[in-house]
Amino acid sequence: MKSFASSRADAPAKKAAAISIPVSLAELLDKITILEIKSEQFCGEQKKNVDHELRLLKHILRQSGVELLPEQRQQLKAVNQSLWQIEESIRQHEHRKDFGETFIALARSVYLENDKRAGIKRAINDDYNSTIKEEKSYA
Image (cartoon, rainbow, N blue to C red; front, side, top):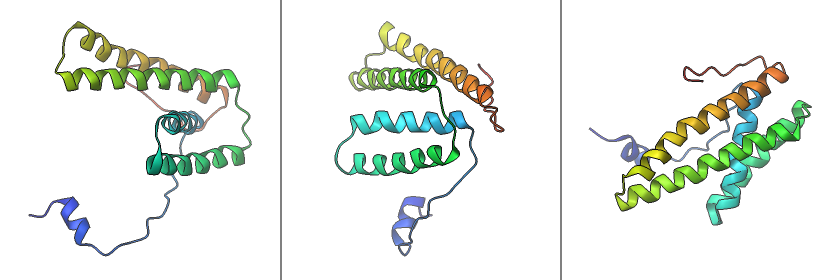
């Protein structure tokens, strides 16, 4: 049986189209802030790809006509930066096979930060009467 990756290599090249899906305002802003963080961290082809997607999503946000409060955007970006740093630290511990107390504390902090993130996103969606609401079972 062929793997998906090997079957794709045999397939003729196709032009990939962008796919549009409905998302909440907070989900769009979350994706934008994550891409901003990636843009700050990446270089070369990765940065080029991230910046392309970031421009597209910022254009969609501008077209929506929604004026976001800077504090909400800053809160969401801050929690995403925290998650980025935590996950980088976890990867470093994993690479060293260091699964001690610090690793455990970092792993636990992921869900705590994700709870903060869910709360910020919920508040944004509520404040702007988003017709799509993201539901979490843990927040």
